[in-house]
Length: 363
Ligand SMILES: *Cc1c(COP(=O)(O)O)cnc(C)c1O
Image 1 (cartoon, rainbow, N blue to C red):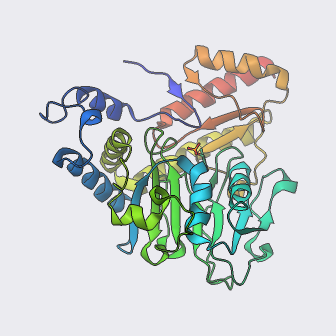
Image 2 (image 1 turned 135 degrees about the vertical axis):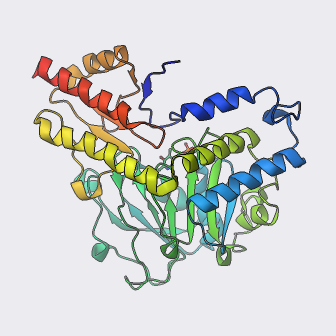
């Protein structure tokens, strides 16, 4: 079957071998006579599925033993509340704003704690990362929150900040919903990481949380039990029924990633894909990406045509070529190509070929 290339920002394309395997196992998982959707989350079959998924994830991202991995629900947006409910003690928490997602995190956190803006790139139209020297870090902040990849604005940290070197001992909290598993994570600089699954991991409905053990047990009394990291950790992510099918698919994606050669290999491919697209855009003299080159996202590439009146034509022609979901986010406009792990290099080449042809036709 020849599927089109899907550039959706999320829920996003999954690797075809994963979908094929899920289809083959749909009615009868490994001779159990059941679909994974029909199994008890406490049975031995699902127990094996979640244990394997966690072990593979830990191996892929080299997660140190002092971090617990939680399989939760609610997505990145729920974490905007769950993080301050668990970590802030109602006191000061620092927020860095680099785009729409971190802005949303700050706004929600203000309902639960004294959330402070330490720096923002809003006046630059969310096109660069403020230099760490400009951040106004609070001496007593319970954590610093940032978004490692702004899915809408296409701004990505190439390296996590070293807060200790900046004179802060606050744990770093990262929203890595849209670049998790695309590159390694430097755990020595992280206290907590979270990400919704539907960009780079699997189906919507699953949220991954990696939390350093010393940060457990600080939740505010009003924190819902099902969202108290300690309760979730103590119950092996089974305090409530976890999103079992989404965990199963995520597990298949982890196995697929290992088959690809792991994170180092997938990162090399992601670099290659991103360079292909940005080099073409910059060299075209026709298309434009406005993000400062040093913090351009490898995952989400917003770009503009010289005249918005060509947008509909561009999208229709793309669709006819089997290049889907390229329309930019409504707050930014233009186009956006999301090129997550599951997007093969050939998909990016097909996009560049089409863009070149379109520019020649209209240029
Ligand atoms: C998509 C996204 C979210 C929100 O995810 P939901 O599952 O809709 O809650 C949060 N942060 C980032 C960086 C995202 O890309």
